[in-house]
Amino acid sequence: SAVISQKPSRDICQRGTSLTIQCQVDSQVTMMFWYRQQPGQSLTLIATANQGSEATYESGFVIDKFPISRPNLTFSTLTVSNMSPEDSSIYLCSVAQGGDTQYFGPGTRLTVL
Amino acid sequence: KQEVTQIPAALSVPEGENLVLNCSFTDSAIYNLQWFRQDPGKGLTSLLLIQSSQREQTSGRLNASLDKSSGRSTLYIAASQPGDSATYLCAPLKAAGNKLTFGGGTRVLVKP
Image (spheres, rainbow over the protein chains, first blue to last red):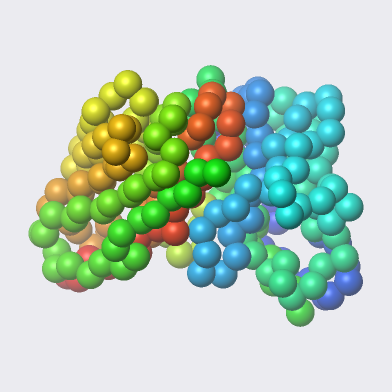
């Protein structure tokens, strides 16, 4: 199974600022995903991070607000831009191995004041 | 669009009882289905994965069944323990390499 780490584990940010979240995997993976979990809610996919090309965003999420980088097969970043209190959530990255089992990182808990 | 429903939303049982968690999904054309556990404020831990061709999958005290044609999966946890207290999420996968669609989860509390 893949071991995934995320940085930071949590942060408190001011309205209007940006935060970049890092996701590191211990092995090369083809598929990486970024999810958001708002308070008391289930997980919603933000985008699929593609290596060597632009991320694929789900309906309701745009690149200007959530720019994603995927420079290689073990690393990705998600930036939450121009934050508002509504962006307070847990952000999780996940990876798929062999197209089957998906594994999740420990999450980044973001609070926006 | 796949929609996933989990019933009940919350469950409280005394230690030692068996747990039955239900998951239903609207699009039966799935590749596989995963069950996850999430502790408060934490990430997800994969519990079981059932391929679309399988009827059930077992790991220790956990057993998950899948009835793809009726769009249902059930997670059974035998002889529950206080450490089983968590939120349990089911997530069918449409195709290999595709995104998971999550249910709202069942929040479980096992009382000592």
